[in-house]
Length: 62
Length: 418
Image (cartoon, rainbow over all chains, first blue to last red; front, side, top):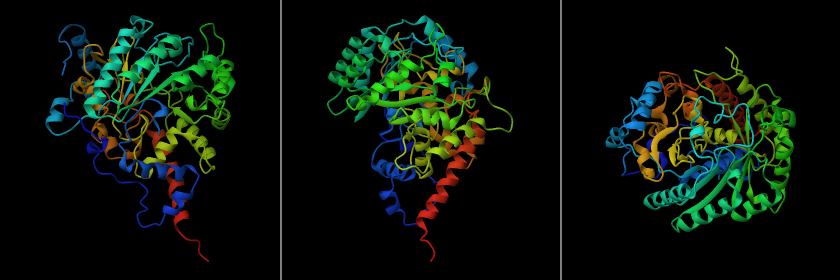
């Protein structure tokens, strides 16, 4: 069977709720130690990784 | 590919599933979807029900207290031939699809009843059978009662990470999580968590899993859990659906969101806060990323369950919907894992936005909410293409978090005026 190698192929286009495309946030994200900075780093890390496959338990979060 | 056997039990199962859940079982055709270009996502996680019985009798357990009582007909202990077949099947699947990482979750019942010598044999067999390029993670989800010092040390040495179910403060925990004799289990679980916190065992500490309970104090619960210094806290909404609504649901009220928001406000903005899977996932989704959990987002489900008799099933949470809701009719000894992609139920959980109801499809937060947990969308006689029974709670939580995030990001990005 032909199976997808990345989960994004069936996900369609993505439109984030918080549009900050015109704002210089990299410094804030890289330097922060709060949950938001951590989340942003996670999103950036996942750009070249087939993350986002649902797992049943918490240790799946890398 | 092996196909499920025709007739008999499988035919009866399919008939029951089509009646109880026309969507997806009567309306979704996986083969037609693939012909139209859709591609399934490989399985990356096998949940092995290595022991079907439990040393606790929690009053909300969705395995033993739900209408699906199939556990009664299965062997208490998973035989060697079953877990060996499961590992072999996973190894072939990993090789076929070039998977870099897979996970095996030891589950039950209570997996520690399976015994440590069997666990050691299973872990050794797994590492020996997987392709060299595939990394294996082994996790256990336990109630913690049997986690003695020797057990923790042995699991840590085997590289098995351990997640423990705890419901917060001692009195709240003991109200629900009791032994068969009616005694609370908190003291034993607290001892186990203290062991996992020790530096030598810390790598084996996967985290804490907690059920959201609006009749408890959310901040007190969060602080009680945080005191155990878990790497992650995973808050789960109690399993419910449109036929069996959440215990605390009331028209116009959002008690589950209110509880979670109180925790979020306590947690958010702290320096290096403990990871809270639900909040971390929603934050990542708000920023344009993906989720790895069942509760939010549109990611495809990449896990399957192997029952102690070898049956390949979807996750236990579906058993809260109707008897047989998790079943596929497949057997890990006979059927390759790829075979599950012919199952409408498995396929439905990999479709992302295409599995959402019309209501969800027009909702502005659909990519964050993702329709909520699949089990919570069930409506008797209709199936799983509905908004979550927690829809209002999810919307309120996401709106609250989005407002906080938006304000913070704008504040951080705009230079202060002189």
